[in-house]
Amino acid sequence: MVRYSVEPDNIEKVAKSRGSHLRVHFKHCREIAHFTKGMNVNKAMKVLDDVLAFKAVIPFVKYTGGIGRKAMAKQCKAPGSKGRWPVKATAVYKDLLSNAKANAETKGLDMDALIIDHAQVNRAPAGRRRTYRAHGRIGKYASQP
Image 1 (tube, rainbow, N blue to C red):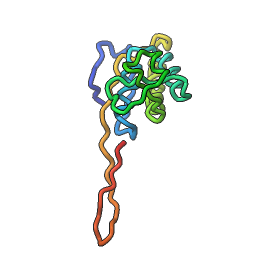
Image 2 (cartoon, rainbow, N blue to C red):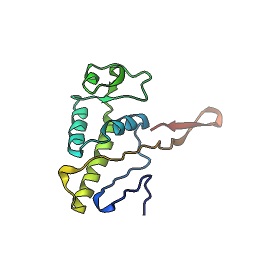
Image 3 (cartoon, rainbow, N blue to C red):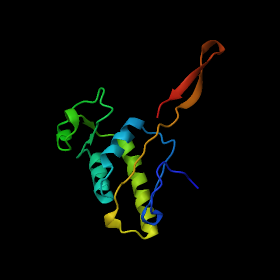
């Protein structure tokens, strides 16, 4: 049995999905989760499709260092009009959302009334490999997700 950080009061009315050690940027996933929390699932899926098509922007609220301003970010009232189109993280988050939607359908829940109530993002561990250098040395070859 998988443990979640938040356990619901009524288990029959909840559908969950989970991904761990995903190779996407933590900060991008955090901003996507923050933006979609409290949304209807169908509306969130439509917004994520628009982000993948560069028709909508994800507002960046917390991690805004070096984030450029976008005119689209004014539509969602982003502070300082800062936003981006994090394509890879959006695709991964959309897959998790569609998995939760399928789990809800399996449970027999009403598909039109689904709401994103809880979304949590944790950092993945850094990938560690090694590369061979001159004179018999070995160096690090790390990848940040």
